[in-house]
Length: 259
Length: 291
Image 1: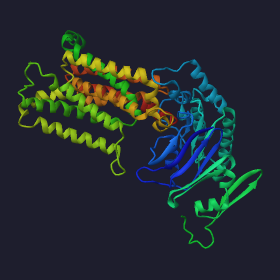
Image 2 (image 1 turned 90 degrees about the vertical axis):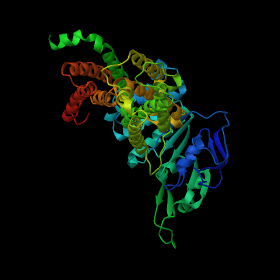
Image 3 (image 1 turned 180 degrees about the vertical axis):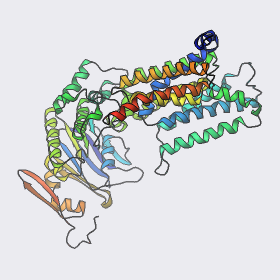
Image 4 (image 1 turned 135 degrees about the horizontal axis):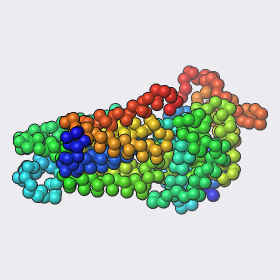
């Protein structure tokens, strides 16, 4: 079952950013989106979610409705000026589920507490958000996304401010949640190894070269494809049962500048 | 007579203005929590000035059809300054909600432009030959004086307050979400623009009506000072709202009393009293850097 399909979609704000593209978010899949800075990843994500109207083509919702989305934004910290507790922030995730004119009930509070427990920060529920560490902030964002009872979890560069160990732990958490809640995941990231290790499908995006390719991760996480994407030599290796991606210098014969 | 006895003896004079001040302070101190947290305090100042342009424009237009602001003759409904004021304020609130801007013209610049241009427009209209003779009277009507408040303005303030608080009571979770994290709210299907418009319209209506009742300076002060003072002292949203409203109400009543006793300008005295509530929070921050 597909959750969202883009068919011959032309994405962009005023002018097309990429050639017309086809993209499917399959139920139960993890779609990784890779590309250099300014490649059009965010525009692609917005178009996929229906937040940015297509300039051409169509967005198909095979279920007849937009799937429920849990969203983890690209942010290393929540706004700390607000006098909110962790539970207050997670409760925001229920807003769409409840709808206007419906107040949160006990079961909504319970669902949010369970989301916090599942992430491993149930003991922080009543703590002010300004008293959290960076890693805890990220977990609160995931708990809020889970509180929305999502079918599709969208992570926009969630580990950009994390050290490698924290990134690994975070991605393992996402993988566990995906299995436990039967989620589909869209992961936009610069962390090649994270995408290589967790994505089932990968989209490569670069507006500078009008490049858009999508396919199974095993086909897309290849040195030649990633090399074209980043204009560098790329090595892909199995290390300790995991795929690791290393970006090297410019390809032989190039002038050394990135594309 | 003692100061308080003298004050009490004059209660027929101050009852309505003080009630208007307290009502305005309570409403604005509540809305101020959102305004301060959304980092849009100058929207409040701009709204006061823009609703002033509406009032001035009503008199200016009225001068063409022979309306005298001094006269107690009924003003045609379509020329009522209240409607002009609300129309201008609501128009600006809607515009701000749409987040206008450009990389070279940031939203705060637009708010600043709206403030300064509307301030100049009010002065220009008031000093135009058509209504210059009534400029002082129009100025009081325009920005209130917190000393004399017609009962109709108290009713208008009550109606504006009921409307704004009803919106907040019914849609609090939506207003909170889009105020705190509009990006995520949008992605999760909570229509950000319509809630932003509703939130800003509620504030615009109260600010517009309150400006005419108690004046621009107290309105700006009550949207900023009590909320800022409360935010420094509390870690819970409900506590912040309760404390902010409490500070606002006390500042309005004590300020009015002190202005009477010491024969000082009422609006300014209220503002000075409200600013005193900043001290505990500043002291707390100074003593505890982790707050």
